[in-house]
Image 1 (cartoon, rainbow, N blue to C red):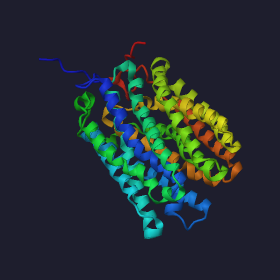
Image 2: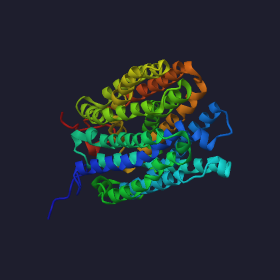
Image 3: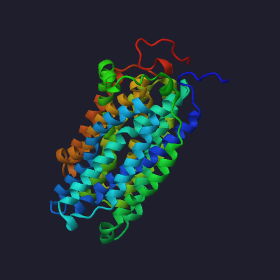
Image 4: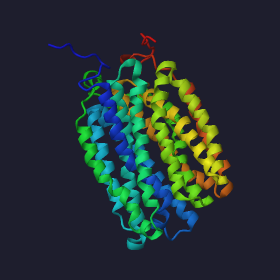
Length: 440
């Protein structure tokens, strides 16, 4: 008879298997989520808001992108409860199914010219479903991977979820490269729909992958299923939830890069769509390598130094990237964009999956991560809309960069005042005081 596994030991699947499954699932899930942002920046103003002026239409299209983040805190409450009460695996199956169905539905929507105001209403409704689904995706995948990981490599293995997110962004942007090259009439009639229809493949592949995952031993052996996770979370861990909310606002760097900068370059400065899409593709390719390297570094020197250093670099480089777009110099645009999103942003992006998860014990881990991150991400989701309002016109990039840098500063304060967790044993995570650190 085999000896029972201890909490934190990898269960039946190895840590690598769990990490790869999280990577693939997140790539498929966030392909769906990111193609909406690209479409909102390029075509949705003409298709769903044609009666508005060009500037107002762009603002409304970007606001519809932000609406998806409104549903994320609600989804975090529901899916966090399900994940902490009934299991991580159940949440991961639910999220990929909801996201895929909503995305295919968007690709099938008639335009405003065909059904009038019902078109943008249906668009916003399906976007809300996307946001609801995304709320549980990363928290579920991170919780599952962390609870399968060796104690001294939690940062590395949990970073696979975010590497998968970057891969999804590459796929989503790449799907629009041939579409963006179509003649304008074909792009507006059927071309923009193709990336959304491809999500049907995502649904099938994602379900097959997620259904094959094993539940974590930490959840099965340690979690007290008799209590409501939300009640325990708010009573005993509200401070950490608040810290995650503030720290998660660093995701503004991502939405500014992927949505606002693209809209600013194409709609305001008048740059070509295809080169700007390639900036995103190449930056994300670099991020695929940089994220696990930053996570490995955090396993050695700590979560906080890597997190803070990357966020500070993002605050500075946002000025460089948006400023280079204003000049129209593609060499500067590619260089600054890759440095910002491919290198600097990979530091907080590679570290937060472990850092946030390590703040909470297993009985509220998924809820704590989901609720904290999704409220912070909601701020990030509306940041392109805020940027359009505070920095319209060609010279608005300075105000927008300053706004982003301010949110980065809040992130630095939140992270700097938190606990360092990279050497805390898995069984002690979320407890105070912490004893028996993992040997260096």
